Image (cartoon, rainbow, N blue to C red; front, top):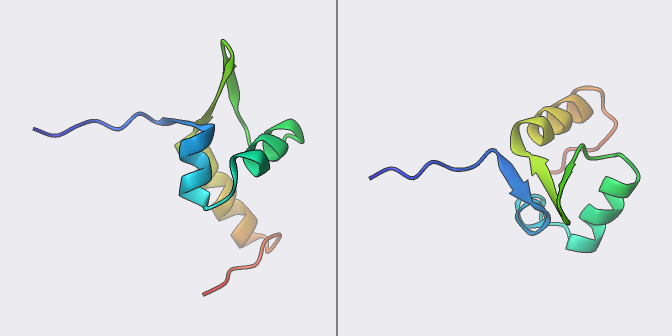
Length: 67
């Protein structure tokens, strides 16, 4: 049986996905660098929008690609 993954990620999931601390994610949300929704007391980050933002940043060379 296939499990469907939610397109919305928690701050913890986003931090793990980006390999950042949760504090950094909260800081990025507060500075509007990461688009997020506040649902009740929790912040949710749309995975597709986050990936689009990363692609745009890489394409426009506002962040460095390290590999």
